Image 1 (tube, rainbow, N blue to C red):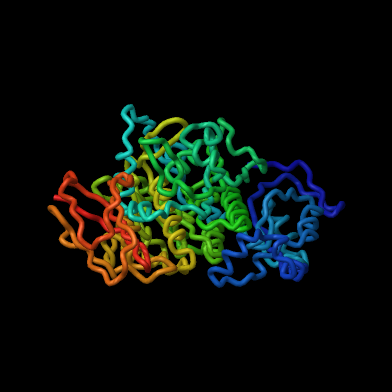
Image 2: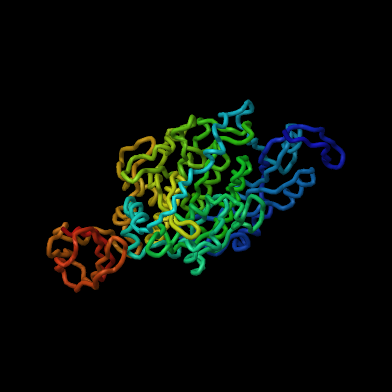
Length: 533
């Protein structure tokens, strides 16, 4: 229990010692919003405005900054204001019941939301610290093999996009997680450092630029390593050429409700910077102070503060992916927030054989909507960390694996509505239209999604066929388009041969196995699998 010895209110009213709680104070309006509309770049980067224009998203009052005088008014009441949200138009403070009543009486205050939803206590924390993050195997590979990373890339059929040249370049991903120790020094991240792909970051927990401190939990570093890690001939992430903002919002040592607001602040900053994708492997339902605990009935996508602000991020044109959680074997059992929000793309975990990871949280959400949306490798996921490759398990790592694939799709189709991409990802998953409580619509298939939608500059795939496939000696390309070039790639994505620009090619010299063939015509590029017997 927190004690306040004395508290001055308007210089006259004193409050005695009382138990406080986290609340959010909503303001009634934004009186100076006209100044924002007159000069949007005062608040949003040009990249953010361009993203809105690309998707036809109009500016609204959520985008305008909070009225500074309102914040000052709250401070004048004696409150310490460290966190606020312009999307929700308000500030977070700790207050007693008496102080909440005072706040609700202020003329500039619309309402006060209490983060305590169940005053008698929600679900009691069960082994909270042991299960706070996914369990790291820390099994650094002694014999590095790119194939370890390749297996999970192939499982979600992402290689066709990489071969086609879509590796996330020009797409910006915000990783909202714990800290990012070793990212500024480890060789696994040297490629994104050297190429200037880390565009910035911030620690919303202690309000500083300290995101690399080695005392911080390294969960964020692992998640980044799934997407962006690169060790030559050992590991390549799912979007190695994307740009990144690194935001710390999760206190690895504690579970406090303020973290929901920290996450919101990070998402708002990601929006300001023009981020395209948010990958977050965090989720909430129980806290160190069990007054803040949530129930499964709260996992309806609209009850928790973080679920609502995650939806706003989606509505600003950001593709938000969240981990389903690792609660299947725990008493809680179900997905956790913000993965419960309908518009958030929720990712479950699978094994190398495609079965659901035993720990992957169950859906649906409490409103009956299918969750997770789809799944990716969550058991023994390969990644790069510090100076080496490693494996670990958890939906925490299935999520950035999927986020990298989404970045590649956005690079290939930058003007496609995100809702359309989300829906097609579901439809092209392995068991659609069927679902299971852990898989959702099944294992993601980025290649089929890409093939169905084509690129923004060309018609959809389907105008080119390769036969016979599997091939023994020769194959033929059936197309009415003029062939410009034909390139053959191995399963590692390495170009191994430039074929003649003829419709029939001889490959009897190739060893048996799987290959990718990239055909460039006068109208578009195609990437197809080729099986050599």
